[in-house]
Length: 159
Image (cartoon, rainbow, N blue to C red; front, side):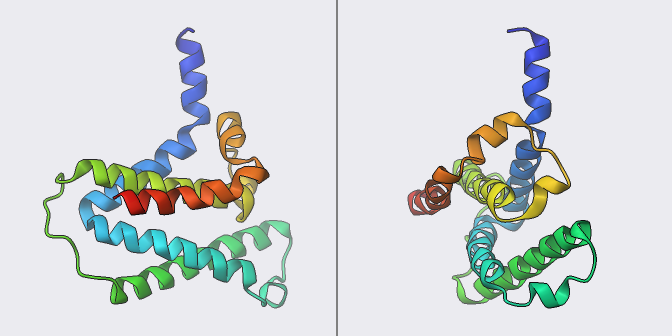
């Protein structure tokens, strides 16, 4: 194991690292409850985007624009669902930015798992970026999709 091996693994895992850091900073600056709302918003957006009946009416361009439209619609569904959960869930926890850091890390890991499995199984993210072979091995296997989908719920229960 030399430095070249570690830089290769790091470069292939950069998508995972960037997504995790985004969610960690989101939890740090917005709070744990905001990230919990976002996680539930991701679940609801998954359901809506899978069953959305008007994709064919919206798609007018080629495959590249179809993938981009699917990603944009998923982002819109996620934002709307997150706003809904923000309205109906309890108020924010009263805490400082770096308080309960372990819980924020677990929540960021939960949201990262959801984005990773959605990227490999539901959303056409792999048409725009190549996440790398370690991520494909970890999240790309279709028979583990259900278990990866349940893992964030277990982490939410533990937090």
